Amino acid sequence: MSSLLKSASAAALGLVLVACGGQDRVSADAIAAEEAAIAARAFLTRAETELAAMNREAAHAYWNQATNITPETNAAAAEAGAKATKLVVALANESKQFDVNILPPDLGRKIRILRSGITIPAPSREGAAEELAEITTGLDATYGTGKFEYKGRMITLTEASNIMSASRNPAELKTVWEGWHTISPPMKENYARMVDIANEGARELGYPSLDQMWLSNYDMPPAEMEAEVQRLWGQVEPLYKELHCYTRTKLNQRYGDAVQPATGPIRADLLGNMWAQQWSGIYDIVQPPTAPVQYDVTQRLVAQGYTPVKMVETAEAFFVSLGLDPLPQTFWERSMIVQPEGREVQCHASAWDLDDEEDVRIKMCTQVNSEDFYTVHHELGHNYYQRAYKDQDFLYKNGAHDGFHEAIGDFVALSITPEYLRQIGLITAEEMPGPDADTALLMQAALDKIAFLPFAITVDGWRWGVLSGATKPEDYNKAWWDLRTKNQGIVPPGERPADAFDPGAKYHIPGNTPYLRYFLSFIMQFQFHKAACEQAGWEGPLHRCSIYGNKEVGKRFTDMLEAGMSQPWPDTLEKFTGTRTMDGSAIIEYFDPLIGYLKEQNEGQACGW
Image (cartoon, rainbow, N blue to C red):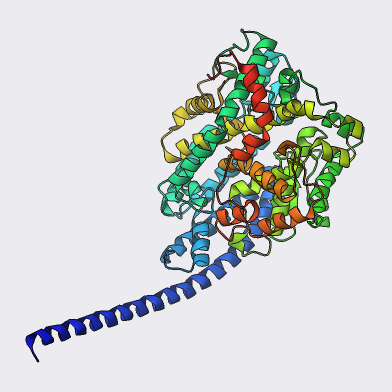
């Protein structure tokens, strides 16, 4: 054999040897991957069983504490919270043995959910979970029992909120606003300590800080999610600025330059809400002089003898009209629909799922008014979502992302149109507002929906700075108001005390409820609404569309809910809307008739702040 042939043969043999070696490696890698998958599946089966049992135990302890705040229920909730935190942290740490990149997609997804799913993680060192649980329970109880002295007696947040909405006396508004904000300074030291412990827990789980852990729950890298929020805000910010400019002018006309200047930020206590997050309480001040809406929903509810229970029944009937099942009897037996006599409770409205199956409940101190009429639809949206995904595996028993969960009930509530109110008998056909009342109808909606958007990004914008360590405890309050002024164009009614901790006067801060979900939900509910109206064949203005009674829409709606968290949220979004991207264009379309009016009214004004 010539040397050339020898060389060629050697080269061929070399290729065969390399190929064989590659096959051996591929084979070995495949075996290793299969073994890892088997081990991961066994681990997750055990983990989900343990988590489901612990979730039921903790849920009952937290329910008991929220509906009857006592030292005993606080202690029981803290004990359950510590136990649950220890379990989740232990399982998340145990999951580190698995490389999610080589596991089958479903197993990798579950492990990612497990690692990032706990809101306030404790490190595994001795005593950390107990200390963290005691702090979080204490913060929640401090808020829930908060009262302050006004006109010689102690008043609650509910009473204070009623004053904020009804009063037109700026001195009284300032006093009540400042009074409620006295409940939070005692929280500050414990809140800062909680942040330290939770960040230690987040780092143990592999995240640089807790804010990055929270932002890891959206099927994309945290930096991309932050950019997505800014993109969405950019779509709707121009509408907010027009509403801000118009509202400031009306407040200036009402109160004068000494109370509300015609330029610059708006005084926070003048906007009809304790946190200036929604402004519908001052509709009488800003209502357009066009054809008015001839009815007041609160007055109609009262006049027709609605009770809190009847309001919840009416909301249930909406979901049933879409083809969903009625709520179980246990819902009516176990929910806290009105504030009970003789005990302290957490009145902040919330929906609960105590067994991941059928034991769904709401907790509200419901009043017969328009605001709570919408709120009960929102809360039942959570309950119907919880029931829809009850057959999913435990780690998938959640919304596609947290914004979905918040959007569902509000999406349904967008169908509380004049036509719907006529259908359920709250108004008569003669009282149906015509097209000339659209500006008034949309102004009412904008005061809630558009005014809320910058507040929603502010709460977690502030918290991300705190959780990342960029905002130190001594700067908590300054950072809060810097961001609120930047995003919302509002300022407090007066100089704040040195010890102020104004973020703590909003439930979601001491309650440790991530707030980005609400911003996303306010974008997505309009996206859902537009898609549903298209499915229903609606051809009129988007704000007049109601899907009440449309079972075809209800079927597609139910399919979306049943998926839970079992797949990336763009898959779930596409299933209902036909698009894989969150989009603010539907909210612009919805309010388009109002935008023209606001721009016309703002002409010549020095808008901005």
